[in-house]
Amino acid sequence: MAGPRVAFETLGCKLNQYETEAIAAGFLGLGWCVVDSREAAEAYVINTCTVTNKADRKSRNVFHRFLGLPFHPIVVVTGCFAESAKDRLEATPGITFVVPNRAKNQIGALVDAYHRGAVSSPRLPLPNPFGFPVPRRVFHTRATLKIQDGCDNFCSFCIIPSVRGRAISRPWIEVLEEARSLISQGRKELVLSGVNMGRWTDGERNFAFLVRSLLNLEGDFRVRITSLEPDALGDDFLELFDHPKMCPHLHLCLQSGSTRILFAMGRQYTLDDYTALVYRLRSRRPSVNLTTDLIAGFPGETPEEFEKTLEALRFLRWGDVHAFPFSPRKETRAQRMPGQIPDTTKAVRTERLRQEAQTMRLEVMNGLIGESRRVLVETPGIRTKATTLRGVTEDYFPVRFPGVAAWNEFVDVRLVRVESEGGQLFFQASVVPV
Image (cartoon, rainbow, N blue to C red; front, side, top):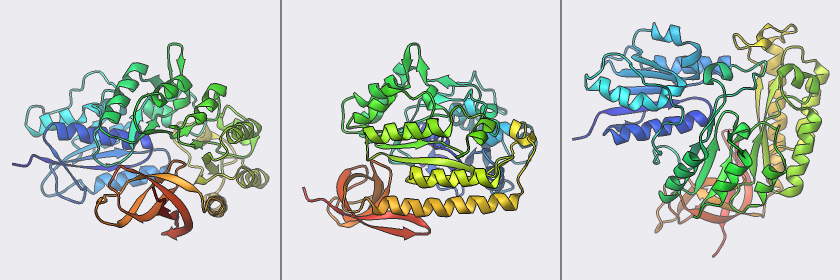
């Protein structure tokens, strides 16, 4: 007989995605069935985000879908919005549990016990942000590996240190053990995740040491770093991009092209520092695809300073840009700063960034046509039947191609042309004959 059903909704960052997958794997181990969130279930887990006001609204809209359902499911709200709005959520009828970030690993056991009538209220042991089981594949092909949580930077616009806590690093040996387990499961890509990964440490070991340890493990796999701050990255880090298992892609956050605005944000680098790092990376690995985040309309940003951000976009030639309007978060310094920019102006500036970024992305992708790439297949395929397969290249471009392959296989392709669907660019490719 099938077990009870649980469904998930995840908003926000790669770290949330990892944690949801790990929570889901824990439910499967307890005999639960994971179903789509549009289906009826005994429990719904909503992993929320609070990085912007828009993220707050989306989080509220998602969990309200499950409140007041006639079959009275268990509703668990966790994630960063659950931290910032804890009291309000706990007073909301229909929400069963509000679970803090660093107790997410206990959600499966808590819900299972509650469903069986063994507990009536949450009694969580001491928090452990890394205490998840090794996740087997539930939602994603690429395996996310959590190495770090929290942040000590306290940028003036950012609420994350308040909701994720101070920086904490996962022990080196634990990271390696989980990586070996994932590789033994046949996972082909390890995606390193954390809030401020570049500050990972374990005794004398630094982030570059950790990544090199992973790259040197045996097996047919590759390692991808997600988002990094552009400070404290030395030659030992740049040398990682010489390794054949290292994905030549890096999301390197800039936020603004104005050094004055960067200082007001509390960032720990200048535009010149960032540019020098980009040149060093590209001189070492010319094929590296760099992507970034940009904020438009930070308090006091003049039209001339915004133009500097546009100029940076044009000369740094990122492969993709996440552009956001400044969103004032409660209890941050930026919320209290003079010179708040009107929402209409922020919207106009953000749209200009996005249009320029899309133009630049198209130029970058067109410049790669004719080149070969190794794609990790992320759609179900059948080895005996040709179908349209989808996946990502080592430098993190989406690809579609006709072929005969199965999920989680590497396939060598040649990039044929750039196409668009729903405003999203992707490569159409052909398989390279063996």
